[in-house]
Image (cartoon, rainbow over the protein chains, first blue to last red):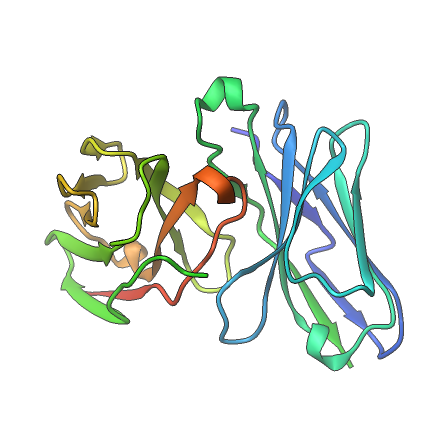
Length: 117
Length: 111
């Protein structure tokens, strides 16, 4: 079965540089979520999109922005990178509520490991 | 924001059942109990979820107490590949969507 695709899988950047992470949801999934997992930490919710509109926002720095495109893929843009941004970034997708009932089980991608030097 | 409490670690012999407990005493009526696991640095993997009835799938069984204040995830025949951090997450209602990952339980399956 098709899974969530994230690219790149690894990314190394210098401080103050910009990074763009991409996420391709499972086909026919309309909601995308972004999570950040720092070293030794648990995943933390950043932001989500439903039908190309921002649906929820967590502890996402103002230096970060994201969007969902017409083909439902999503991009997380990170500017003025700091050492503390080094983390695993996971994207998850969920199907339309009509297919999953009330719940929206999230399916995660393999993650992008961002290292800021 | 975590609404669940789990033991930090457990271990289990390979081939035996692993029973992972979770307390969610403040769960509201429209909230579901989800279980995910994360094998070292991989993306979290969905296991199972339930509202009030016990559930079973090819991976595990979920037992929810009648008052819904606690649940147990059961891996019937644990293997070495089941070694992971297991997260019990309450989701739904006003927080529909985002998942709050608490500290989870590190399950170690030994030969």
